[in-house]
Image 1: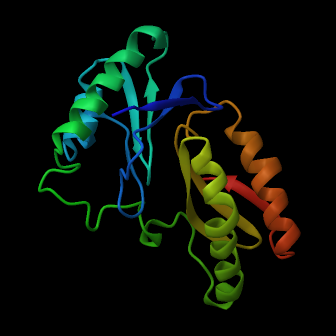
Image 2 (image 1 turned 180 degrees about the horizontal axis):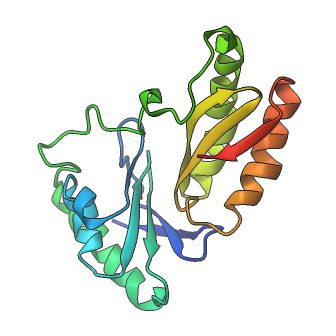
Length: 192
């Protein structure tokens, strides 16, 4: 088995591609060792002592290193953990399956939506799924919809993108520009 590694716009994160499916559906982010207890893979990565974030995507794992960590020393450890996991066929999650484990659903909205905006919200979701999420996944992360109200779209960056120095520029210039172009009612995008 060969695991490819890609850099991300976030200098603290690397994207690892095992050449096989990681998550059967959705994504999952682990931001601390306690949350990682749900996944033997994520827990093993946190056990290196130098990992601050693990993000599981459809065909990749993004790992964010602690400040001051030398990737030349951590990278072989991460590759070893990933190889051990995928070669052994170990389950991704405690209990064996990933069913029901995905990006937090819309019930965790940060703003209360107006039912009259349902058409606008549907358009936002369509653009997020078709144009934005695939681009963000290429950089080792994901984007989560957190609500729309009064022209403002609330989004949350995850994975390699959550702590990226360019995430604000991505939200304000890239995503905001795209949404405003296709949906005139959108006036601003804010990080949730």
